[in-house]
Length: 351
Image (cartoon, rainbow, N blue to C red; front, top):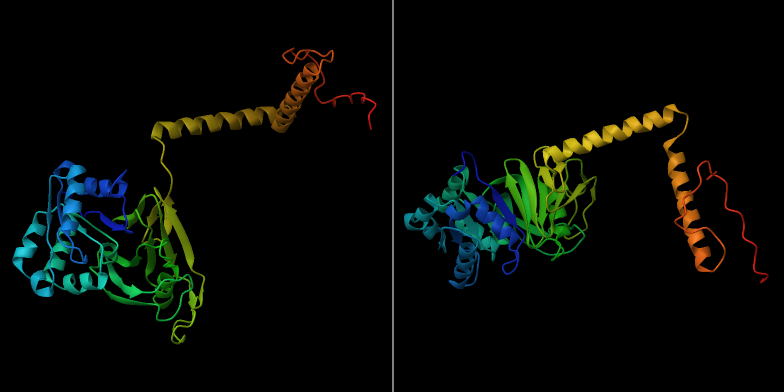
C-alpha cells in the first residue's frame, strides 16, 4: 500500500472490456497489480449479480489477486458493518455505472462512504465508471439534459464523496453532448473546475495532478475569469459564459488542478535522449554561427542544394526523352555556377 492517498480514476463510461482494456489495466496496476484486492460496488447499477461477475472476470484476467462485490442497497445497508468490512483490506474500490442519484443517496454521509474515503487516504485506488466517476467529486451531477448550449436549470447537483476537491465531473461527455450542462454549472459556480470525461477514457488524479488515460479526451472548463448572467437568467434561458478557459486533453496529457495549467503532453523521452538532442542542437547553432561569420547565410546553402536537385531531375527527364544530355548521375564539375538559371530549351516548333 502507498504511504499517501491512492490514485483516483474517473472513467467516462463504456470502457473497453474486450480488446486492449487500457483503462481497466491501469486501474488494476494502481491497485497493486498481482497483489490487488478489489471491491466492486454495483449500487448504481440496475443489473443483478451479473455486473459483479463481469468485473470479477475482467479484473482477475488483468492479474488482480482477489475481487469481491459489495452492494449496499439503502442507507441502512451502508451503515451495516458487514457491508463495510471488505473495504478495510481493499487496495482498490471500483464503483460501477448506473443511477448516480441512487449511488449518492445510498453512499454519501454513511459509514460506507467514510470507509471509502479512509481507504483512499491510506493508499487504495478508488475509481468508478459513469455514475461511479461523478461521485468522486465533492459536488456531483445528479441528472440533467444534453446539448451544446449552456442554459439555466439544465442540471441538478447532489453530494459526492469529495475525493476530487474543487471540481465537478461529468461522463459520456462527447458521446452524449454534455458540453452545455457542464458549462452551465461552471457559469453558476465559477470556483469549480468542470471536468468532462469521454467514454473509454479516465481522468486519473494523483494529488493535484490529473493525467489522461484511454482513447478519448478529458475536457476541462476553467471559469476563474468568467463573465456570466447566471445570477439573473430565468427558467431555461441560454447563459452568458464569456472568458472561460478551455482545455481538451488527450491521452498522456497531465494537468495541474490547483494551478489550473497544462504540465505536459505526449510521451516523454529518456533523459539520455534529451541530453543528446540538446547537444545536437548546440552543434547546429555553432555551425550556423561559423557559416554566418564567413558572410554566407545558411539559407544560401539550402537554396543551392534545392537548385542542384532540380537540375539533376531535369537532366534525367531529358535523357529519358532521348536528348544528348549528361547522365543524371554525372557529377557537377567543380566551380560550376549553380546560381545561374537553366538555359531555356528550344521549343519544338509547336504553338
